[in-house]
Amino acid sequence: MSEERSLNFIEEIVEEDLANGKHGGRVLTRFPPEPNGYLHIGHAKSICLNFGLAKKYNGKTNLRFDDTNPVTEDTEYVESIKDDVRWLGFEWAEELYASDYFDQLYAFAVELIKKGLAYVDDSTAEEIAAQKGTPTEPGTPNQYRSRSVEENLQLFAEMKAGKYPDGAKVLRAKVDLAAPNMHLRDPLMYRIKHAHHHRTGDKWCIYPMYDFAHGQSDAIENITHSICTLEFIPHRDLYNWFIAQLAIFPSKQYEFARLNMTYTVMSKRKLMQLVNEKHVDGWDDPRMSTISGLRRRGYTAASIREFCERIGVAKRENMIDFSLLEFCIREDLNKTAWRRMAVLDPIKLVITNYPEGETEIMHGENNPEVEGGDGGRDIPFSREIWIEREDFMEEPPKKFFRLGVGLSVRLKNAYIVTCESFVKDADGNVTEVHCSYLPNSKSGNDTSGVNVKGTIHWVSVPHAKTAEVRLYDRLFKVEDPSNEDGDFKDYINPESLTIIPNAYIEQDLATAEPGKGYQFIRKGYFTMDKLSTPDKLVFNRTVTLKDGWKAPQGSKA
Ligand code: ATP
Ligand code: MG
Image 1 (cartoon, rainbow, N blue to C red):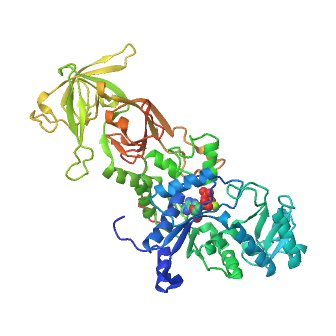
Image 2: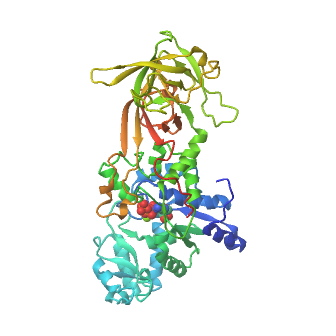
Image 3: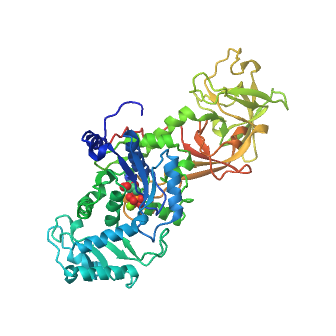
């Protein structure tokens, strides 16, 4: 947004740190995705925040893959995440992997054991949970808690060496079994998992837990401001505890409210279900809230950044209306998208007094918002053109300013025509509309003196290209599918995709590029699908021209 806005609370913290000379005026943030799925619009908020802060305060941002869970992670996801961050317009200082720190993390763990601050526990997960107590009752120590440093060192080394099966033992931090914060009641640091890791292969069969990997990774990288979502507030004490006991770089964690948006789900696990169960056509299906889905649908990076700017950064969770995202893409495309004509539900219009076999070149602007014009485009016109079926009525009501026998309209960028008759097939369907045109009514050089109220779009029959056009609606029927009874997938909108197999489009659209936005006049904003081919052109509707749902709320959180 161009207008000045007040600082968000994280910017206030950074400015205070800078004013106090903390970290020598250095700002280093990180974006830490787990590579277990594709990024969604919620991640975009975190990306814009982390990279945006660094940009604003002359700092840097690391891209760190939080890959401590070998079972769910994959290099396909790593690549897609890099693509998405870059596409959003951000550059990271360093590409890093938590798995690169496995040796260092292991050494940290050994250090804590030596300090008497960690122990190997043979209890089952159930036993550990039961011994932890409740928020109002302290936990009870078990016999493993008093193991000697030597025994712990040996057992931990054996865990690493692969001596024990999954689940047989864990390494726990010895913090405080009576702590009011349950996360401090001797949290797990390492578990045994005999699994292949996408980067470290079979080197490890013990993997650090999130709480022991994340803060230490921040410290190893000298991250100054570690920004995460509100659900990590209860983890903060532990984050600080590990850093203090290890006396490593004092990174600090700050929490902001995650993005929730209506008519969508925002969790990789749920998005993965939609993909695996084939409710959608892959992670980048244009109905998905993934960054790759939005991109394929025709959303621009600028519109997503603008959206993230508008929703702001808050400390309290709320629900953002999907319409706000649509508002942002409309605003952007209105300024940048080239105008073209496309007929989605065609009916033929024959201009009976126009010479057969003749082609005339009309002129149209690419984008009327561009000051001084942008050169425009040529549009071939001929005796037979396609118009929208809905622009003709057999029995037009009063105030129908389009076609019906006796009614006149302007053909966009061309002539005024008057409907004389129409043709029906045996089933009673109108197949052709016959009109006459006013030769002296050509757009830009109209001397006819005739005024008409309506203007309709058209495409010349011999010059038109055929395309499949895909119209999208909300993927879910309800505002918050995750918060309804039953499974969120019960609320999928069965009409989220409408395919128009044979639309007619202006010929130069055949060489459009996926991602470039076009306004199909009166029909919405579209972009070519990434799988479109010259033999089968495919266009996706990004968004309609007007909001068919609710007026966008400026939703300043
Ligand atoms: P998911 O539940 O979708 O898998 P996650 O938090 O587990 O999300 P990560 O890959 O761990 O996904 O997230 C990377 C970063 O993005 C984290 O810092 C996380 O806090 C942030 N993030 C994830 N979801 C959102 C959201 N909806 N809004 C804002 N930030 C988010
Ligand atoms: Mg996560």
